[in-house]
Image (cartoon, rainbow, N blue to C red; front, side, top):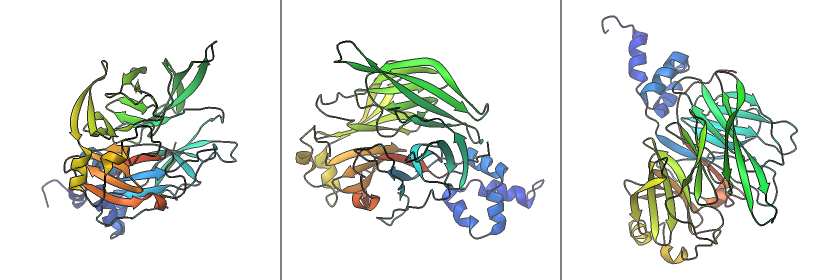
Length: 383
């Protein structure tokens, strides 16, 4: 025994350095270890020492012609050798069906399904530990373009949420339409929502993954040529120009945003190839081109997955493109290729088939919500 350290101290010191996935497997072996891993002090220590590693993506389709919610949530793991493995019950420990809204640091934020509901609630949960907390929340069926972002506070059970409200502004000529976004911030320290004094004028709606948190700032992708940003500490918003122009007749986004090494990434795929950009200057909207890979090169490296991509991507106005980036995190891109969901590793340039769209249920093609997820033991306490 190390001088001055008990067996429990040594166990804490050694086991707190293991990956979350390894701890969850060990938890099934020993009840004693299971109790240790559920201890608040151990979870905090492990969260401080562990580096988040992308383990999968949560996926949920949407209806195209009505505002009802789809209840089916799929989890697509990326950290295993098997392909076409989809989990449909990962969030079944929650008391009701939910709709995905945001993810960060191993936590998932979702709301209850609004179909035939007269009340609403937000759930923040940790799928690895199956812990969850519930917040009462007011929701209006007439409200559009709403986004919710999750901002964890280190390794503690504290977190903050940011909710966007969108107000339409119609001008006298009825040709132009702008929106004003306001920001409501919730903190577990106060247990209350607070409306920020800041507002942002923007003519675009929010799309794809809502609320990407990067180094103190939240980013929302829009269906235009800007990204909506909100500095959480200063409570100041800003519009950031995307690095490449959009096609004027293309509806919706041509890329996705994500976080890697504390920086904001923008990934777009066109018939000329895939471009990966990094935001270098937040205030000046300055981007750096990290990499540019031609579709021919991607096809040569992955002939079993990609076929004749450049020709199939020639129509920039295609609402169901052959290749479409869905989500990005930690150097791993989840994207659609024809009828498949695949992952693309930026460093190796290798594609991996994960599943087919059909396996994800109906309406999976229509602007789905896709959230990156990294297993974590970040604790949650009842509010």
